[in-house]
Image (cartoon, rainbow, N blue to C red; front, side, top):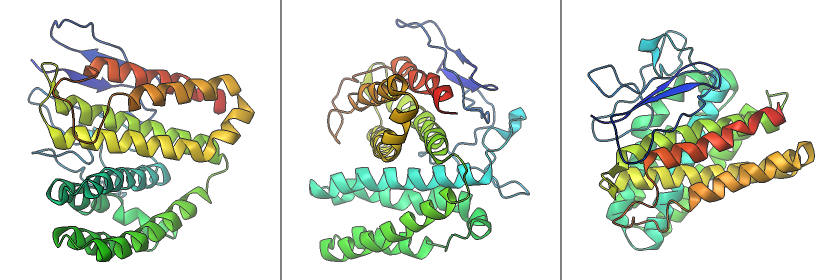
Length: 285
């Protein structure tokens, strides 16, 4: 039976698995709980592929992550900021593939932001004073389809400008910008853990796209955390070092954009590194 992760409550989680060689690792969960169900239960998960559905919007416009389990949806600013950073993660890994000349492999990472992420945050953009950017997403994916590097560069620059403006608009409403960024980083890392679990089967990378998704999310989190690392270090140098050590450990999971045949980590080890990141967050709140 495949592993099931059950996120439940503030800084607590239960990891249920059939007996395997490596012991299951308990992971403290995101403050707003979500449930990933694997055994005939509803599955509502953001940015997942190959039969995974994007979350349905609730009446309030929130993505219903794990709503079947009674979980509280993420606050709109956190939900939107996470979505933006997940889009950036897709673009990061897509750009790596384009630089390697692998346009066809890159294309899914430019399609998924519009197809699977944008719709879940669209209704929250206007209340947060964020201009729509779906057209910019579509324009960029079209340049990748056409394998037009010059048009791609122009479209990417235009989208990056929109994303930066969106980030600024969301953060402007937050009193504690450092903690908000770190909380968003954790949300994206937990999504990366979900993607990585989908990628690994019997110690091998069985799903390349999911591996690349997880890589993009982790490397984007590393960039994002870097933007607040001076402020984090000023609050707690030791905790900031531990955060970076966790990220370095996660980055080592992905030696290259095209995966090795043998997984560097199993999903339990990946979750353990995410848990170490989360354990430091209380030092910044």
